[in-house]
Length: 240
Image (cartoon, rainbow, N blue to C red; front, top):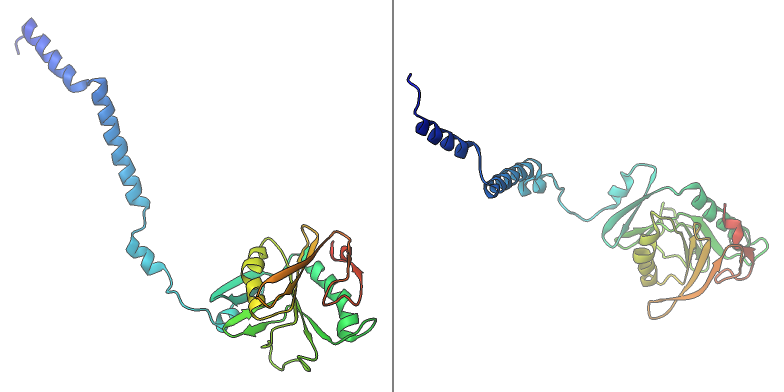
């Protein structure tokens, strides 16, 4: 093949340069197209189609007592406001708080030793209130309202006193969901114990369906609060 003329070589190099090179604006557009294409591929590979989500999502239904019976043994189940709520058994510090509180109340109020008696005091009783199943950490019934304990594994009468031991896993449910249920069911007395803050909040039900805060005790304050104001004990007994 014959040699190209100098002019032809210049035009050939110019055409090749235009094919291999581009202006900065063209390079920017090309990069933008490549990034956009890559982003689209990434989305298409990681996004779940709506139909797939609908198929995999269980149909919503109201929880039943059978759902509670089928829970693992380490979980406590409650049906509150139409939803199933579960939480693990309490950590040692929280378990000690309600064990110590129950010990201070058991003899004078349940057994009537060193106190007036007249109460049933129980740890974690299961209470059925219509469609709801609620489990206070501790609860008490006056024997004048409940002369004998039920034969069933649960109560169908709201307690006269309930106590919740707050924990990071249960505090929100105890305050936002269970407190209104206790008020609706006219539980007269409610105590909230916080082992982390080392406090006791004492509430009493009012006729308007609201709670009246009677006292906030802390650390090793002396406890002599209704409905158990016939005796006195140190709040410090509850803390590990």
